[in-house]
Image 1 (cartoon, rainbow over the protein chains, first blue to last red):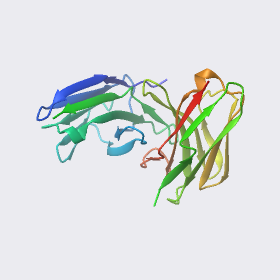
Image 2: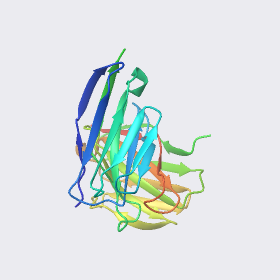
Image 3: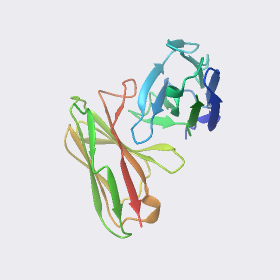
Length: 112
Length: 113
């Protein structure tokens, strides 16, 4: 069974601070996805990383896939209250059609 | 234009009852999924259908029975509801397999009393 350990589980910061969320596994994934979920809504895909060592930037968000494709990180620069939400990482395996394994999630609160 | 829709949004029912949740996607996708999100926000896949055929069945009790009448619909029927079934159930769809983006519905909040 593939497992994804996501940390921290909760993060409460002030506007303007930087933060990093980590997603780790002992398993290799074909790709790693990051989702953001707002209260009362379904998760929305932010980014997919597929190549070991890959770095993708989405405005103030930087996503990195580990060289061995077992871990990933999400870094947010100068967090804003609008970044508040649940962040989920999810790993996909090429051997399991369509199956995503999700981490436990990080609840981020950015205070004005 | 809602891409993935679910009904109902809220479902409150008694233990032992049977209930259904409906899901429809208008994205033309060929793969649909059911996920369960527990009170700790952990999201776990339950079922996946590709072109109306069951692809993934993740050790879910057989009280849960998905049904895909066509590629655009994937319904979830739950028999003999138990307290532990209380959760948010999400439907999702994608075009193809794990490489493709999954689009999630707004969720159905099920509370079993």
